Image (cartoon, rainbow, N blue to C red; front, top):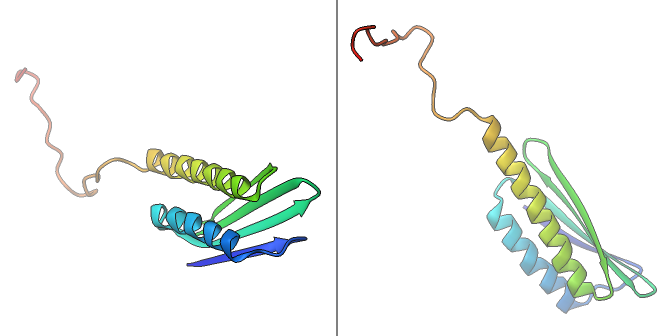
Length: 117
């Protein structure tokens, strides 16, 4: 599992890097299928933008972007968006999987007799 933090037009300070890393480690702990997380920080005038790209097993690809006036708020907001998307994805995959195991094809099927009600 790799966490990458990149700054565009901004130097990433140690405190911002540590804040982003702590939040992303919680995300990775909650979703074990995540393999690679890339946090991209960008500043344009007064707009502080944070973008997260998550890659995982079984073709998981989640992207989110948040823009605010504060870099810490942008990081928190984008991670909330990614967590929401990953939860939705996990729930969707769980709904599509059949619940329980089916009997093997050659196994005898037990049926109730019509008069046993």
